[in-house]
Image 1 (tube, rainbow, N blue to C red):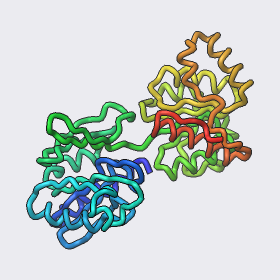
Image 2 (image 1 turned 45 degrees about the vertical axis):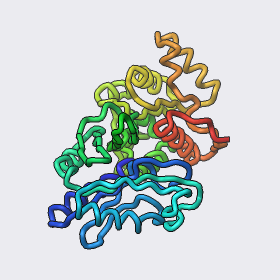
Image 3 (image 1 turned 180 degrees about the vertical axis):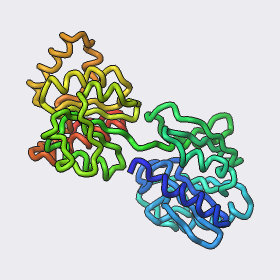
Image 4 (image 1 turned 120 degrees about the vertical axis):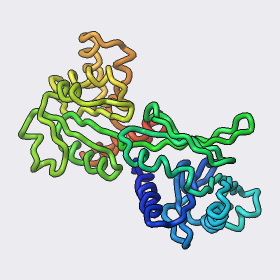
Length: 321
């Protein structure tokens, strides 16, 4: 999920409000094989309760011991587990991976919990891993990633709290039905835009945000950020092309259009004739989706969503053959 940090931070507030002392463990760096990504959190209370994970279970015991010390001393600890470290072998991290985990008492983070939970755009915590001092600031865009930096003797961890991505789908077709199901499972807020009421009906799209406006007007009326994806699926240039014109002028991180290579070449000609530059048109992923050999609507939807997430997570990737 895009916001799998949210339940942990909700528990931080709830557990603190209930009078429980807490420590926070955070994965701040990984190399090689690691079961949990950078930014993953685990909370531990003073009675041994815990929530979340910083590994597949192999280092949690050592982290809990460090958490007990952090709650008692209020001094952060930066734990380093590698195959060259005897402790790593003891906790089971013997597959060539390395993970660094910051363990700290929660006090420095408490002033920012409500801001994190109430945010509607990405926000950032910058933590000094030696002192525990923490700074809160708004995020710039969705391209920022959590990272550990060591400069001039300071070890700083920048944790980015993403908000749910937004997906605007032009065309209420069979592929769209499968796409909104995948989006929901990924905590992505999907809106289906199609003025054709025979396609965009509540019966075909139950519990989905439907918009019956013309796509270009619908997009202009909505906020498009660097956390927005726009996919055109209608196969109707009267719907798709005006939507693409709006999309290509926006900061959307992913823009894609369904169709064959021949269809996309014709699309490029039309958009060029409408005055769009080659660099702008080049932002379109067309034909949309990774080359999975997809045939069914569900398979095509999977290929498009996989490509979208690849672009978001890695800035694009080679197609899967």
